[in-house]
Length: 623
Ligand SMILES: Nc1ncnc2c1ncn2[C@@H]1O[C@H](COP(=O)(O)OP(=O)(O)O)[C@@H](O)[C@H]1O
Ligand SMILES: [Mg+2]
Image (cartoon, rainbow, N blue to C red; front, side, top):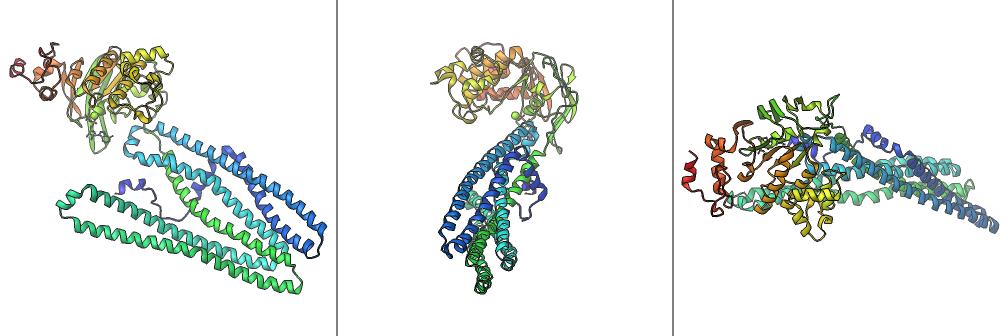
């Protein structure tokens, strides 16, 4: 399990906040410092004017009500109204500015991580779960944006409230303020202690919960095996242990949460009791006014919430920092596929393609291509066949430069392809894969990805050549039909045809098709076949396919086995060799009930339309 440790969601037990990461998050709002300054200003004004409100109440009691002075009462109310108006404007200001900043920061972070993901190589995606990446893009950016907006706002508000309250308190009575100064750190400490404890229990029970879910899952989906292997007792015991532990943890969290508020209240009550006792004596002695004592008590409550709030913000901050650590770890990962200094864009990828002593592996201990040599002439069509896991997809992935050889070179037009820029290669290779991918939008938009400046007429022409036009015009909205996210509203075959038409539109110099026909019906396959032939005319093509009818159209067939080429030649050459290809062919031929009966590639269709049965004399005829 150690290998996927880094992908655990909530696997941070430390309650520390790493200040470097914190500063790095805060640095991400630097481009919007005006917004930050704006909302910090507003929140400061809000906090100070809240302090003034309380001070005004002291003034009203001491200067207007007790001396029964109506003029003073009206004057104070005028000040009160002005203050209230400013307060309202500033509240609007900070909510608007913080909200706006949040939107900007979230957008920035998402854009950054999205752009960064585009630069990472396939090998990064091989070892990183998609779900993990999705959380980085969604929830982590969210938490970071919340921290620099609402979190920063809460901290500023709390600190300003505490300072404001202390300043006003000092003007009323410094002895009473000393009581408060002793109380604040105690309250803060208690609040933090509770929040941390609750968080620890909460995280532990969340983790247990996911383990319980996994256990459920295993036992339900594997119920037959569980019963057959007589695992019921052992599984029940395991489940009981987990459930009991979770029960205990959840109860402890509930107990601590329930205890938290009373504890804070008792502490505040003790402090307020001490203030009333001491302040009451001062009022009796005449060294303090009644309004002063009332205002003082109000300031204590005014401080209480911010202090508790700091504890909450601190625990949010821990989570945001943990999010940020994962986010930055992703941003700090750099692609192992980069342009060499001085890499050029030759403007075309036409020319011969050559593998020279290429070695490649995904994991060092498991070599995939071993000393691989191959020379393909410009315009040639190569079919790759062979057992699953033999290295066919790897070969074409290397041609597309989704990966690069570990040793050895791949040359295009006589030059090591790492001397070209990645973009120059990727933009001139057309790829159709087994699981086609479309982007949400209309069919027309998806086709246009092939060549962004294509006219509508060119798009439709390409769709015709690619075999997609007929099904597209059958759709209710034709080319304007929405394909849904990832193309979910279309069948695999239809997506395949669109990918193909997209490639036709692009007129790539190199065309690669990896098992594009393996999950489509025969009718669609025939259409794909047609599109493929169009592409094969102007591109150097590499086709990986199961269907024999597809393979036989190639100029050359390569059998890829154990990371090397075990047989190479035309269909009839390989049939006469009676090796792997021959066996593969005969086996497939028997399976392809609807395939045309033409095992030796002489172009003669089956006289009866093909029942797929292989008459013995035909096999014999190959000898
Ligand atoms: N992304 C990957 N990470 C690790 N190993 C891989 C990856 N892709 C393929 N392999 C391994 O490389 C070998 C060749 O695979 P591949 O080229 O996909 O074969 P084919 O396309 O002929 O079925 C297999 O052993 C496979 O398990
Ligand atoms: Mg494959």
